[in-house]
Length: 104
Image (cartoon, rainbow, N blue to C red; front, side, top):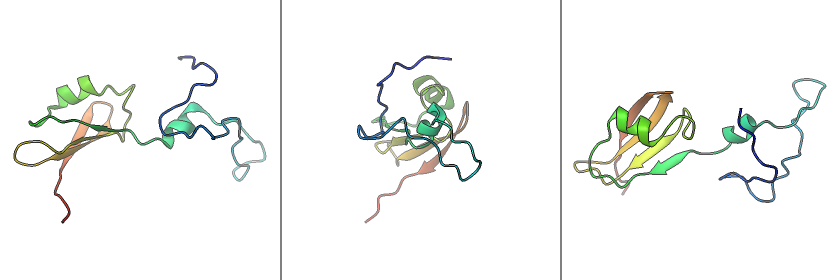
């Protein structure tokens, strides 16, 4: 398991966030400190890719490794010739895509 230096801030977490805050006692009588997983659950992992061609599963897995882009991560490719696509990671090495249409 990697060690994260004290004071490290993550994208999506406000500098005013009290990372020493404790979890609620609603589920049990013992309070616990927040874990890195708790913090990551609140971060939106979305990447913008300016490619003009559709991406393969191999390219997505290489460019966006699961260690950095966990399940639920999105890759937005609006410039694909013939219509943009939004890719969504649904498993460690599996993706689905959705056609993007511009709202007018």
